[in-house]
Image (tube, rainbow, N blue to C red; front, side):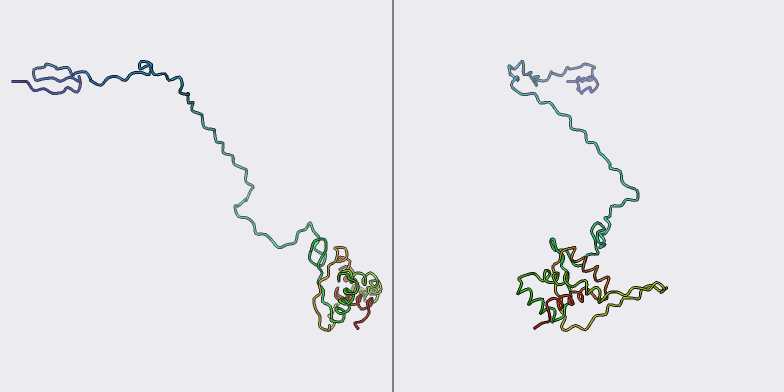
Length: 207
């Protein structure tokens, strides 16, 4: 009768009922050989050195007080770095000043531009330079008398009834446009009225 055998997990042996032990056979799995024992030359394999990853430094810019992430809306206010009192709109080195001229003044202006081969702005400035003094004198804003405690009278620039008025763009330099505005401030005429007077005085009536 063969005794029962069991495995002793504490000693790693196989024991029987009579207290005997049966040693376990050594493992048949051979131990791995090293490269040197196997005769393998590993000198040609480059050595790979692990690089240390760069350190990431987080920087936080200081935020102004009461700052917010919303962008303020752009305003339509004109830039204070550029004068906003010059009449007209910029167009290159010139200003486009649009005036309302009656039919007679337009006909004289068109006839003169065809004859002289000049631009309308140049034709108008020739007439203004020739007649601005008499126009400024005839239509000057009345001054207050020294004894008048109420100041100068109000300047009322009423529109005259024009014959078929049309908008006419004039290309003027900044100094010419500003000079026309300053002249308008001293007379009872609008800029359109000043130009109309100058055209008819200098070039005559329409034929």
